[in-house]
Length: 504
Image 1 (cartoon, rainbow, N blue to C red):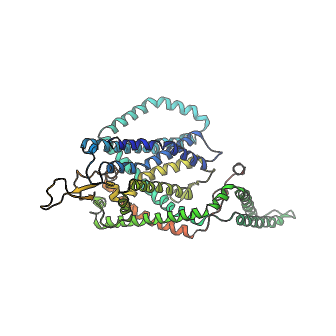
Image 2 (cartoon, one colour):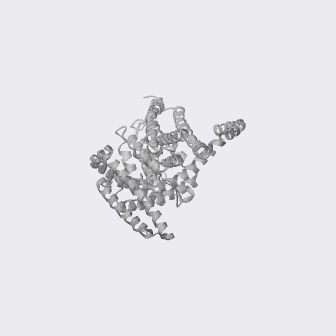
Image 3 (cartoon, rainbow, N blue to C red):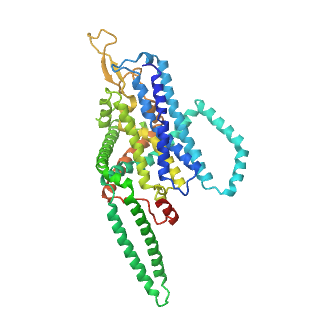
């Protein structure tokens, strides 16, 4: 083992880039509207989603080098014994954070808004005019970009970048409370409940069609003698005809779903889905308990609001933190678990956004539906995921504070007494806040998260809000019935043209 091993880890992660891009392409194309799809918005959504997934892998990459520097007996490896070498590795990870987080800032503040406002909604008549204006201002804008990078390269730019990222992380906290908390409940319960029977839904839909047609005939019979319908009857007739169109479209979709092989495969995999759903709900409950214990520990043992509720170590037994520490001796189980935890947050966030749609307070802006999602909605989805990923590191730190702070590092605690004549003798202990400063290396993520105490204070109260939102979402998900097998495929505002395109 040598100093290049952590760098080889970074290089090995890049080998997963084609897999990540393939997943992002399949995911975006699955939900993208075939009528409104556009090349630039599609590429932007795929790239933004890939950046979110890659950024979510930063925490495991951060924990690995600090743990890899030491032997299980607590001594530094030969290549890491030098402070300069350790500093170079720490700087590499830190620059990785700044690079990916800068890309997130660029996507959130510049690229995605540009595609959303100036490309998707532009008129064809304004293309030339817009291009001329961009060419005239190109040199001035490039000078500003150059100045920005020069500032970020200096010591003055890094605090500004850290503050900007912390501000976005605060927005990401709101997205986590809204979407991730709900996704952690709705995803496993949907797997456990399954969907309604296609045959039963078709029968029920046919009965509804007959009922609506009977009501329409009853209204039309009022004007057989030539008398016009009243305004109230005309309004009711229009509503019934619109309802009939929706029911007829549902019937066509249900007919296709009954013949679809994916529906039959899903029925065959029903036992596996139930097991997976039970596993996911147990993981969600474990996370909630661990987060509650961590917040309670901060409330009881931290210095309070002015310190950002920061504690150095754990005073209460945290099950997830203890599990990660117990897996340390069996390499690489602890790294696999922390990676799974990170991806679990991302996947549940995607599930929450997919089920809830895009909201601005109480106003629903967009729906996320297979093959029906507008490009603007996909851009919003990717932007929300980027913000959620920024807050994921703090969430995982709250779940397992000691492990995220030190990884699997151990150190030699000197043995006191006359029997300890050898300078190298001592007791091997897991790194914590009591360890000597030169014996345990703190992860860059921990330093990054606690750069500004007031943000840490807000994050602390955000964790309580997350627990409350999860419990509310769990109650709502339990009270809801089974989903339709064509959930989200048919809405009243869909056009017949898009419906025919989807079915055929």
